[in-house]
Length: 154
Image (cartoon, rainbow, N blue to C red; front, side, top):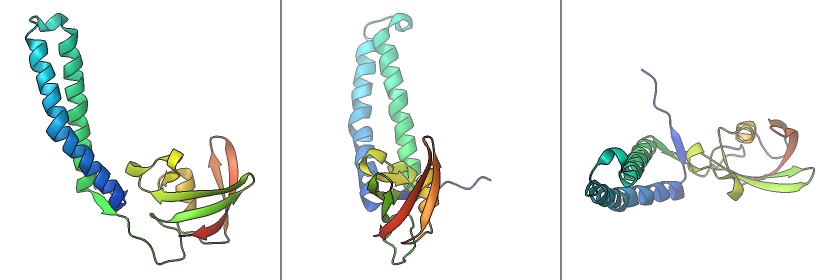
């Protein structure tokens, strides 16, 4: 049997997923059910674009509900580490040639690079895990190799 994948989430990430799940179950499902009912009233379903669109929407909603339920069932809450080593949940300040950058290492379900939240499964996240202040790491990214010097770990 294949072991279930653990999803690393902050308490904020769990809260956001629960809110999204609640909206999908209690609002979006009802909206799509109404849309299906209305589309069915138009008659012939074989050439009914409204019906097809509502069925596609229903499939997306049900898929997302299942995905969120799986993530929450297998969630592992990220706790602040008391260690000097970088781990999931750490906020890391690094120096690059162009200046400094800050990364919050989170699980893949919560990653948002534009907000500075990188996945523990990303090349940079993997390279930072287990490292400490003062260390330099070289990471291969699509743009080439980048060297990071770890300045601070929160």
